[in-house]
Length: 102
Image (cartoon, rainbow, N blue to C red; front, side, top):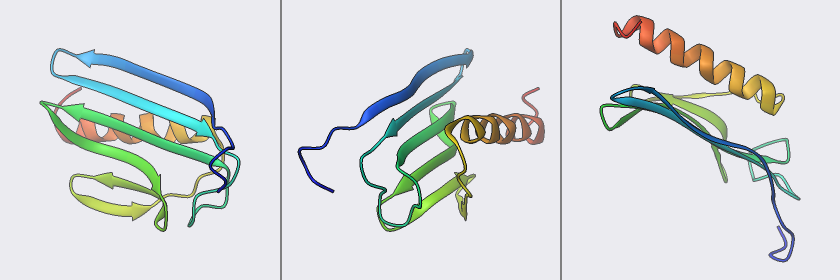
């Protein structure tokens, strides 16, 4: 990637969902895809409960798109920023259900 090319912010938010939990995301449109990803978005999404990140989606150079949940990492098939946010929120709801945080 050329260093003089700029990224464009698509979406950024930090939402308090409980006294002890929040979700946060940042999604950028970048000039060139990061190594391992087939799209030109850079993203990081996190769900933090009691100070611990229990769910995270991101795309690191060389690793591509993936998610972390309860210490396990798995591949993620990125399609659009909207689908990314929907999938993240669905996983967050599932985590809450499985951990008694309805």
